[in-house]
Every structure is written in C-alpha cells, then in structure tokens.
Image (cartoon, rainbow, N blue to C red; front, side, top):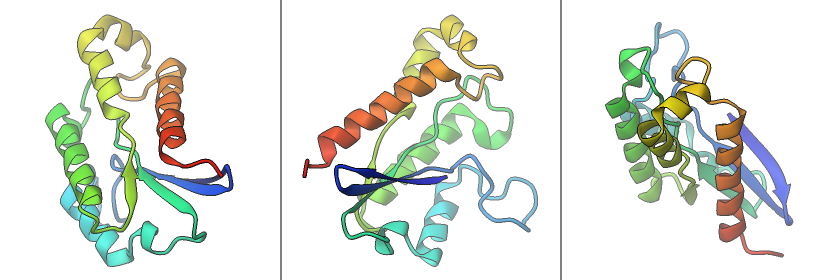
Length: 152
C-alpha cells in the first residue's frame, strides 16, 4: 500500500506490498515475493520515485516482515529473506530513482528467532503481527525518517 503524509513540509511515501499477487488475471499467487517480477513491474509501469507528485517527496520501500510460518511455498523463511535482499539491492542500484529503504524485517526476524514463545503470543496466525510489534515497526519508521529527512 502507498501512504503519503506531510512531514516538516516534505511529503513521504512508504511503499511495500511483496506478499500479495502482482497482477490480477494470472491466477493464484502470481509474483508473490518474487523480486525479479517486482523489478519488472516497476520498470514496466514506471517507478513511483520517477513520477512524484511533489518535488520534495521522499520515497521509501519497507520490506515484508518475518513470518513464524510460511503458509504457502512463496512465504518460506528463505523466500522472504531472499525477496527482501533482492528488493533492497534493486532499490539501492538506483534503477528506480531515489528510493530509501527502511528495514523492519530484521527486527521481526530477531524477535521470532530469539524469543519464539513470546513472538507466538504477538501474532494470531503466526504471519501477521499484533499491535506490540506493529508499534515497534512504526517507531523504526519514524526514527529512520527523522534521521533521513532534514528539518525545514
């Protein structure tokens, strides 16, 4: 999903949607967590950072979070990790214009791997995180924006 907010006179757009099918009409879970297809999608449709509505807009990619279980073959630990690493490389390459990267994956991975019993209490389906973890993700995002965007 995309969200734009006014921050200190700047516009911020946060973008992340790797765990959803990429195109309708292709059936099933086409493109889910497939960095190659996502890069093609951005290249074909035009990167959002190259068609910004505001000259002071800052665009960031948020990786998908760690899951305690992969309900589908495209949600395994290795697939999610690989997707996030490949998307980070894609955006850092500059192929899609200036896009920042705010990492929330590693925090959820460390929680799940090092405090599994506690982590299982913070998710209702072992995939989607509850309020406690989402508040931490929000704090990571806010800290990254405060450190990255110069005050006006």
